[in-house]
Length: 310
Image (cartoon, rainbow, N blue to C red; front, side):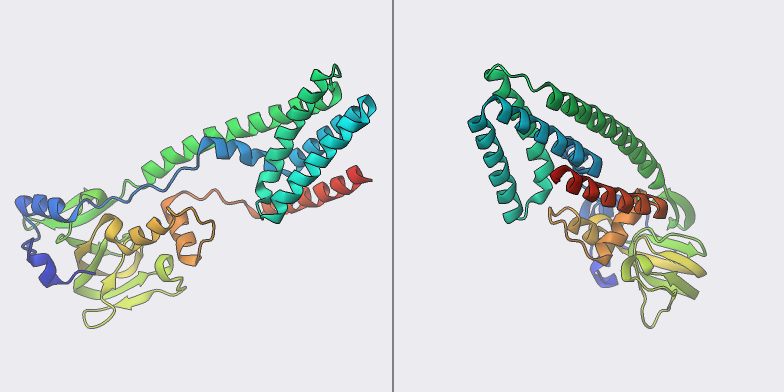
């Protein structure tokens, strides 16, 4: 976090009167705006393929493949044997390289490939095709519903970011959107305020801050001028009042640095990135009832797989 000396080299930060209009422009040009880079959006094709990972869809795909392979065996045992062998080898390879999330997609592609093989030989695998049509309808409806839901959540997230903060400018207190705050600003904090940027306390009165977003601490932390005077964007004032000198904005804040880690393609996330993701996006996590239903669906799917094999 920048020191007061580093800031005053570029911006004449005055704790008594705040920044002037010209100093705000200089700070914005040198240190940037107080905006966070948006989290990466999952490609639509991946969202669509994810629909095949539902337990009921897997059962339908297995049923379609089983029906098609049986019909191919009836028409030509050699063709049926080759089709079954290719399918088994392909799925085994997918699991060996630990890419099992691609298995439902490969099953979907294999079903249409088998139908094409049967059609070339003059045997139309109608029953398997009927199941595949059901799969396409189910996944299509689910994908369309999720796409619409995502667009609505994006609108809500955009509105959620319209937070105002009290800032001292030219000796006057002004209420500004947090994206207009710059390095060197003096922000006035009181109970209930969300801290809009990283900064250091320059004046304080019994300040208590909820830092659970950044540290996971369940209890508010007391802040003073002597120690623990750094405060971070996204945390919450639960008691007291203070004046804060903004030292970091946008992606340079601790919140922004954690958010950048979410840009990586790695699926593994730690507690910090999980909490920040919840903060930056309205949560779409499953409710306890939905979690129970998902476990029940998983159990039913396993029973279905055993029944299909038998």
